[in-house]
Image (cartoon, rainbow, N blue to C red; front, side, top):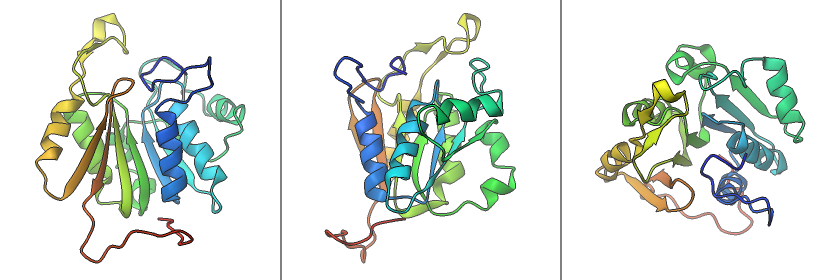
Length: 213
């Protein structure tokens, strides 16, 4: 849980970037969040906890084909893993994003309030992950890209399958779109937060207003 670049520390019970994930999920109050990729479930569990804690609970769709190892292969063990932390609203999809977009579950998805992209860290795959859900995002949705601020070699899939992390190359492309706002957070292995620019008639939500999407 502490190894995958979210700047956590056990000594002071600090979630690191997890506070951002939890806070956004509480603020946005999404009916649905989508998390693509997770080594041992830190991000889906933090977001899942937030959605459970919201006044109107939401659900996390967690997409991971378990290519790094067999950790997510057994559906019953996966649910037991999350349940051990008191999380019961994560629906795991044992597939790649390319496979998931061929399912009825994907076709029926709408109003995704939070999208977290942390799968295979090439610019090409991150582009596919984002574009697969871009038209399904709620108006006030946020998208979070992990490992977005540096380029390095990753041995995640074994020493003979090492590859270059190039997420930042796709982030650079997105910055050229005037319809998008992006913010880099230089902690852990880097996080970039994206949202669409507000429409002309979109007003900020004030205290007491329900902001659920």
